[in-house]
Length: 317
Ligand SMILES: [Mn+2]
Image (cartoon, rainbow, N blue to C red):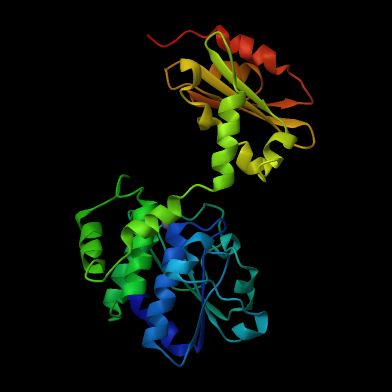
């Protein structure tokens, strides 16, 4: 890879290197940051190497914490983007303090994105950025260590849905084979990453207890006082419609979650092949055939009218 040499030359040139990732960090971008930081620090003990952004706090005890630095610390720095396609999508605003940039990624650039200002290695066929970075570190002659192997493992396993999604190849497995020459706390990493917040678990119990049934429809209305009692924000609480799945053996379930300003997110689901999208559309929303959404604003339309409309839906074949 031609750009691999160019990026390595930049790494050798700069005494300060900051590794950046995307907002709402996931296992792949955080794993790439932790893995690359660990290998760069091992290989260049005299350089300052930082991983910036919020990371995945649940995994900090296993894979490491993010660095807390100031803009001044990045004088003449190289910024390396991992798992993020453009500077504007980088989570930490500190990227602005860097002098030069490089990028390793598996995302497509948007048609309106500015060209990336530095050498980039992008392969959109890869299941995770960690897989590309793993190859690159081999090409650069950085031996892996247990922390880097565990970090890249995290990226590959989480972005591939546990090797489930399209895009996992023999090569993915070869890399994993390499990583497992180290003692990787594989089960612990994934258990920790996928562990549900206990507040969410408790709120879901409340949801199940308070849901109602009308005809073929299971429905629940939730108000700020309901989810706030469990310490949840609207964004999280309103995303939990699937907690109603299977209740009362209903064909359709619908969840009305109101925000503090009276705006209500309405989520419709059917796991029994009852198409809900037409009803969602008739109330100004849309989505997929069996998973849709709409909104209610200050009680309009009346949520019970939505429940009634859903009771008129017939199942597919
Ligand atoms: Mn990724």
